[in-house]
Amino acid sequence: MDFGESSELRGESASANPLRVMSLHALLYCERLFYLEEVEEIRVADAAVYAGRRLHDDLAPEEDETPERRRVEVSSSTWGLVGVVDAVRRRDGEWVAYEHKRGRCRRGEDGEVLTWPSDRIQAIAYAVMLEEGLNEPVRQARVRYHADNVTAFVEIDETARTELARAIARARALRSVTTRPPVATNENLCRRCSLSVVCLPEEERLGTIASPVVPGDAASAEPTTDTEELVETNRSVPTLFPSNRERQTLHVASPRAYVSRNGEALIITIEEVKQKVPIEEIDALVIHGYGQVTTQAIHLCASHGVAIEWLTTGGRFAAGTTATHGRVHQRIRQYEALTQPDQCLRLARRLVHAKIESQLRYLLRCTRGEPVRRQQCQTALETMRQALRQIDTAGSADSLRGLEGIAAKNYFQSLQFVVNPTVAGELRPTGRSKHPPADRFNAILSFGYALLHGLVHRSLQSIGLEPAFGFYHRPRSAAHPLVLDVMELFRTPIWDIPVIGSLNRGQWDSRLDFSISPGRVWLSDAGRRKALELFESRLIESYRHPYTGQSLVYARMVELEGRLLEKEWSGCPGLFAQLRMR
Image (cartoon, rainbow, N blue to C red):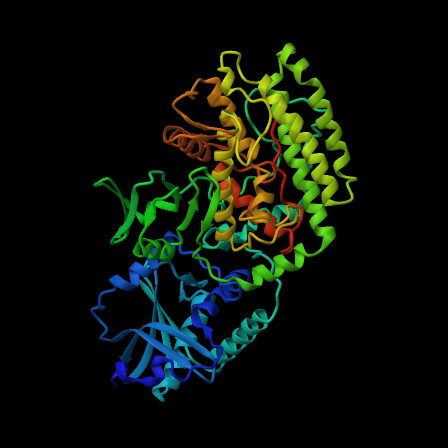
């Protein structure tokens, strides 16, 4: 039979809304995995997935079997399934469906070679689709486990067909609901799952065995160490969410830069000087000012999930791209949750408390053992403590904004007292000014906040959250409310602290690092490069998350907080905004 000419095998008879056979494999592995992949359309290819793809590409004919056709597209209108079977072979006068797996087989009590349930349902599905497409009996499927170098046999009998029908019915039932199934009870499954970084099963399990930790009250507590830490807990440390940053952000700061594509790499050309950067090393491309990007380079970034962002010369966010799918169910849940005033107020209270407490704890740490500095900040510290005490009774977002504004004013006015006396007067902070910044300190601050905005924006988009649906900030200009919300957690730890440290170390040149014009101050090219280095260096520093107990780099922490925020309306509330500094 000519498989290449078979319309049945090409899928022309598939039903209008078919299930992928791979989705049934996911269903039998974990119903949460099925829901994330098939309903929310979230798919992550990790190292194991890529290795599996290479296995199928590299398969050689087996000596004792004659391959008839590999990678055959199959479908069934009767079962409502579509898929691609690894191989179809003629054995003893009958057609047999073959699946290849990198891992080990399941063993019976007597050492018998068996399939795993997820592999079994996949093999059964391919066999019944072949039978329908070929109009011939297919009585057997086989699964080859390459780690053990053995083959498991699956008989296609009435029991097998009943199993398949039951799995299809369950899959269709899950596709009709809007809530995610619970995490798998077998924790070992999560350790091998490519979507554990999205599902966060360990964090969710922690939420079911203990109530969220409420950090010590900064209104009365003093920090106990000189090191920059977050409040720790006695929780066990989850290991599934990546602690380190796998790729780096590519910043293009020259106005004469031209970004193009060469194969699977980006080429950055500046005045005939070219630099080649492989796409797998990049998590985002950020264009500062007037650099140019070709359509081909944009397509390459999109195909690899690399976000592109454009910032103005002054550092303000202008636009950005995302390669994620629509993820309609995620956005529906987010919209339904964030249109509930009580939910928004609850999250806003927690967010503002976290921000003010982090600012307060930073000032307390900087002035500990410094009686003069502590006295200079004393009024501001007490005012911030008073604001903290009133947060839980604030009855509206406007009331919270008032408390936040009072605390912020006192915080920024106090930063001048934590800067060393040796810092030049024109670099010393005297308060907050923006749109545009009126002095050098605020120029540094605003540029870094713009970088932080970009990081949070692309992190939320990669998660699948809609940046326009926030719970605290109001919609305005190009700044998305949810981005501004999540940013509040990270302004102090990711940017304020390293900026003050860099000033105290004498890293800034008040003449060369700034461009001064009437009524505004911007960073010069040299200043922007310095700020970019400071920001990216900060993102690879790590600290311990106060809820999970896991040490992560700051770049990963932004993503983690976004995913914990989504859990507020996805079945496990109370995990978001627990960051507190000592």
